[in-house]
Length: 548
Image 1 (tube, rainbow, N blue to C red):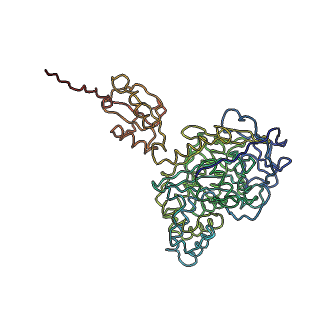
Image 2 (tube, rainbow, N blue to C red):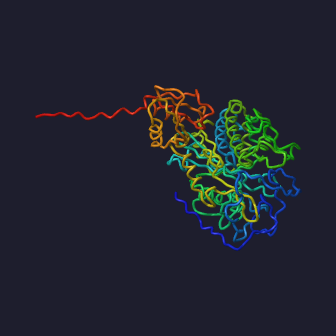
Image 3 (cartoon, rainbow, N blue to C red):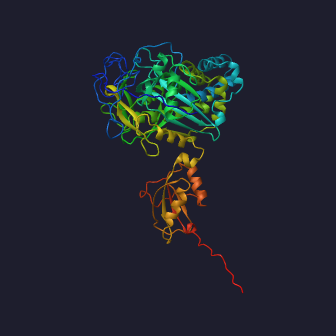
């Protein structure tokens, strides 16, 4: 599908409203800054309901200039105020659906077999609420949209609309693309930053407001769902250049209840700060700091998991959140995988009470445009999809490159835009194409150093040419410390790039090793030590004969 970007050329000679501090959310139609938004770093459903935010500058995620060119002027037409309650919430809520859909189907089948009676009927009722489907469709599978092309992509969005009384609760602060390779049984999760500055209709605003705008404006365009999720889906598909087949809207209560339903989840905190993770913002349900975790393994209940999913560590005295919102989205993806793993354990599947709680968490808090037959098909396709086959992608670190940069938008609000420039998503689209390639070497994009382990001059250059001809990224060449009869492939990734490891082993007819005598000398995924077997054989001169 080809995507044509809308013309959003902004008029000049206008300036945004005065009084907005950096990082404050602003929407057209407001004559003054809204005091109802939570402070930067505070979670929407947890900040004090009557307290105005303190004027505190927002921490920047990346270094460098804060502004790309001139700030965009304010919107040309009045948009809506997302803090006001709009039309009926027909789109319910989603966010962590990939694992929700998968465990919903799995739990349903188990419940019908071992729970029976009231419990089975209760689960069926909740599943119908999620999908608006006919229960008879669960008895057959329906081919998924995108399955013919070998890839099914689901847009997951999470908000806190279930937290009644908190302004701005319908902003989708969690946005994730889940894309499943149905042929090779692999997938990736890519987080879309909530502060990404995008065109919404004729205006520019942060992408977390797209759902609210589309819902209030009754968004309706061919090829997309109606309402808020349709608006969000169109923007992500347009900018990221992907075909989105389904959506799931989850409120944060679903995540908390689902974690509790499976008995909590286990995660490992591996912060660069030796103290671990700390966010002093108050969780007003517990009266304690939002996050206070040491490095190492932790067992989290639903509330603790939800607090970690919300924490950005932007407040004074925070530590362990060097990436701010990027750390938050990374933690979200980690916990989704932990929840998926826990939900399919025997302790959950053989426990009717836990399955019943899981059914309640899903049925009351998730909405999707997938029908029951499609949900069952999705389960059939992904039941053997292990966490090791699900890549986790963050746009601030794609193969070591940050594809985003800070930007100061209308009214002085802090935002993010593509590093290539506003509305230039070429690098991001290239990264997604890499992630969806059927070639494991292209997906993994390994970096390589080539060392000459022989007395033959120029052999490292010859091997480098051999590798670059196959689109490998060779960072450097040099001389080995010892001579090699047979070429050696050293895996420095600890098995993190298995496709590349296998391909390099085959290319050089050797078994890769993890023993690395060059540890600390080269920053690469693989080190190739070229041996005598790579020395080109001398050309054979054609024989000549003489005669009378």
